[in-house]
Length: 111
Length: 115
Image 1 (tube, rainbow over the protein chains, first blue to last red):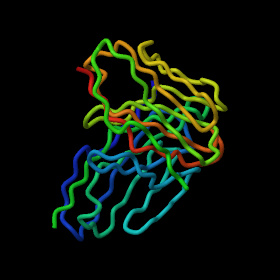
Image 2: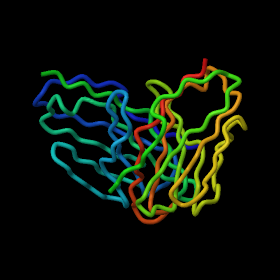
Image 3: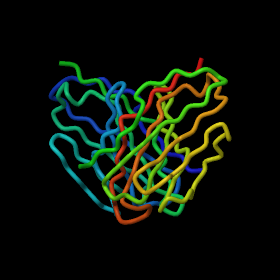
Image 4: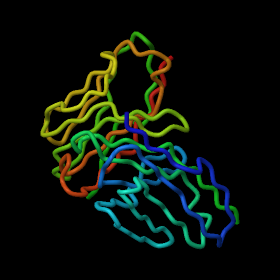
C-alpha cells in the first residue's frame, strides 16, 4: 500500500523565518505535486515536479524532488502571514491514474 | 479558464434521500476525478474517469454512483447515505491521466451533510 507521509504535521513559525516541510513516500514515482488548502477552501496547485532533481520556485516557496530517496521538500523562505494554510504533497501512481495525498502540514505564520 | 465548477456548494440530505453532485469543466480535459475529504484529513480518491469511462473505483460503497455524461460533466449520485458520509466532496480534472506533468485542477467542493 502506498504511503505518503509529511512532517511536521503542524508548524508554527514567526514571520521572516525559514523552514522546510518534508514529504516521504513508499513507492517509486517521478511525479509529485504540492497543493495549498486554506480553511474551508479547495486545493490550489503550487508545483508539479516531474523528475529526479527537479526544483521549482514561486515567490517564497521552493519545492524539490529526490526520487532515489523518495523525498520531496517544500522550503519556505522568510515566511509571511499570508502563507498560513495546510500544505499537501501528493504522489502520482497506479499506472499514472491515482493521486495519493500526504498527511498534510498545517502551517501557521505568526506576525 | 482553469475552472472546475461544482454544484451545489452545500447540501443537507436525509439518509433516505437521493441527490446528486455535479461537476463541470470546459478546459478540454479528458480525465476527471471525485475525491472525498473529511475534516483535517487529506483528500481520498474515490473515482477516476478517463475519456468518459470509469477507470478507477477505490472500493467505494455502491450508495455513491458516479456518472460521466460527456467529456465536460461529471456527476456523483447519492442514495441511502450514512451520517459518516458527511464530508467535502471535491471534483478535479486534468488534461489526461499519466501525461507528463499535467496539473490537476480542483473545484471548490460540495459540502455534504447527511442527517
